[in-house]
Length: 123
Image (cartoon, rainbow, N blue to C red; front, side, top):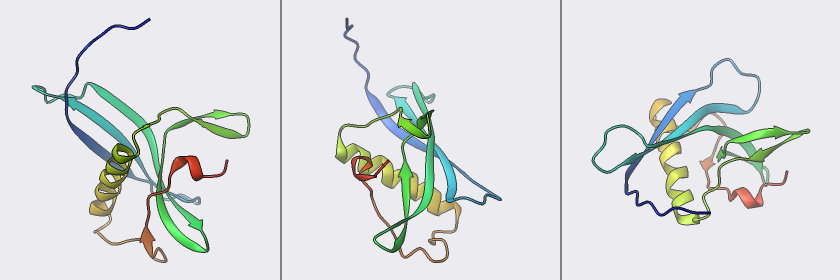
């Protein structure tokens, strides 16, 4: 069943909260607000993104992980953007917000920030 509705999203707003005093690889948490035209309030909020320090090919990088929920020993993604161009734009927006809060510099030991396709992360 479906119902036709027309929603015009004017902007996507990133909200990042730095993770403090953690012993794991989580650097921050993020949420996205999808704000429609002619409104200042978000129509949709997606919470649960994590900004993490990970190692790929012996390089430390910063990634943005989709929200997920626990399934057994792992997590199941609960938010998917099928459009990879839109995902890259959202990923870059979240990282831009993160870096603005940490003084526009990558954390010590991190050489670069890269976009990691969620389909390529082994779970």
